Length: 244
Image 1 (cartoon, rainbow, N blue to C red):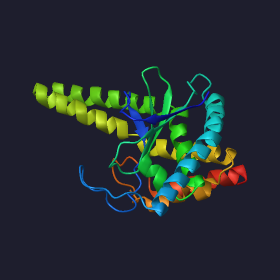
Image 2: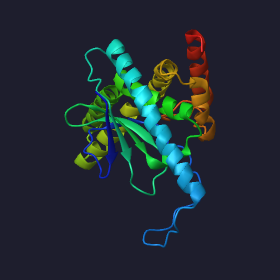
Image 3: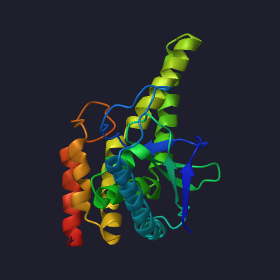
Image 4: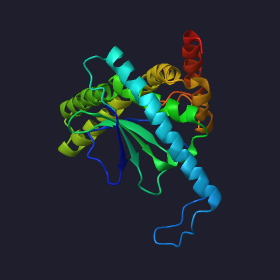
């Protein structure tokens, strides 16, 4: 069963797995309370076209993501809920999370929907975010954070650190633990996302071109995302195996 919601207020979320936001596009938005001129016909048409593309991609990709979820993780909740975060002033972003009932949520903000250049890019982003859920990345990240927090706080306590220092060590350990396998998780989601995108009838290589517009994180120590070149490579290799 597909659910498609407009997010008019912040959801109550239990953690999230997301990706680096795309760079903002277009003119800067006026400050809150400032006069904003009415949208021009060109802008209105672009917005309408983006909305139609989003609905089309949701209708096409979500059933494929659900099938892949049931194939790869048969015990998982595969009833994806697609939501739009319409809060103004945000950079383009998409993320995966779950609600209190454990239902998987794929969230996209308006800036991201407007920033993609074609349906293939939007389909790839959707397939990538769905893959985070299918592969259990959110739960694994939370487990890694918990382990890191216990280890760091334990070491600090053994060294005679103050309670405040132990709490700081706990927070640092949680952050480092959460980052431990984040690059691997992104590449895994790119790989399965390529499969979902292709099986939904979109071009994953063309879709992954949005990486070329994201600042390259390189291979920074404790970075959360792998180099863009590595991500493009995994998409091409997976697409080749699929015969795309």
